[in-house]
Image (cartoon, rainbow, N blue to C red):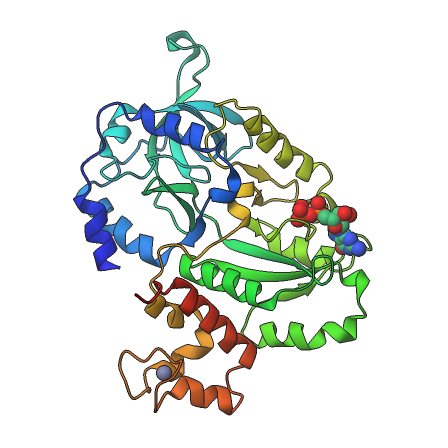
Length: 373
Ligand code: GDP
Ligand code: ZN
């Protein structure tokens, strides 16, 4: 983590013309999505952010003259901000804020909570600008993407990830769930596992898998977008929070979103359709307000959370039930794969750690390990 931090800070400061950043990402957004690497980010980045924030504190704002809101999306140099009263405003970013951007991160990202000063209609040089963003509140729970060696915040202030998996068509992939869970853990995001298409399989067959995640403290729902099973429970989980939907294509995310709120998946799809036509207006992700309160994020780039930038030895910390055992291994740098005196292996033999989760660990560990020379 410290290495990353140093690496990050040693980068040359962004060159003049910060607008290039927006344009670059605008174009990057149109690149094939399969090449995107997205990961949830929190613990690692928070450390880094604190350092930056210490160097360059955000300016205080006159809260009587400014309004608070949330950035729903970014169009080139403008942000669409929804103020707390539910109105949308097209805002620009104050020059001072731009100059505070010490690293390559975007100074304003989708999901940010900001304070903006409404511009009086008479003063509007650019008729379109209705306000100037003067302050960005500290972020938590970011989803970031690595793009050309730079880290780009796709969505800030994400509270939780709903990991959608279908039980059949495509078949359930427990190891993939474990990977998504590890990504969420890495980002400090709460996770909910949503086992969809439960109409295709008798519920009692699903109890072991539901139980195994519940045991890990992960809320696990059986849902069917077709019969409506579990939709109400899912809705309760989303109320008032910012939720990202993740999962392979075909598992039913769009159908679920529509079951939660008719038209929602359509709105989400509109945006990506625009991108595919090669317009460069929508640069980052978009969040959508739910009528019942809360927001959802569903951009193609966010759907595939990945464990980018994680070292193999960091994987053990992403599986919470491993943590009590790892410190007792005979070797400090135990990989928990072949070592004598490994307490993780012992826990697996005694069924304190499930074999499936252990196999997921090995998969993540070896998947991240550089190939032997
Ligand atoms: P996405 O790619 O994750 O957005 O998946 P879609 O929402 O497009 O759904 C993929 C397919 O699965 C569609 O044919 C849906 O009709 C179907 N589907 C979605 N949810 C369910 C469900 O709960 N039960 C069943 N049987 N089919 C579903
Ligand atoms: Zn070990």
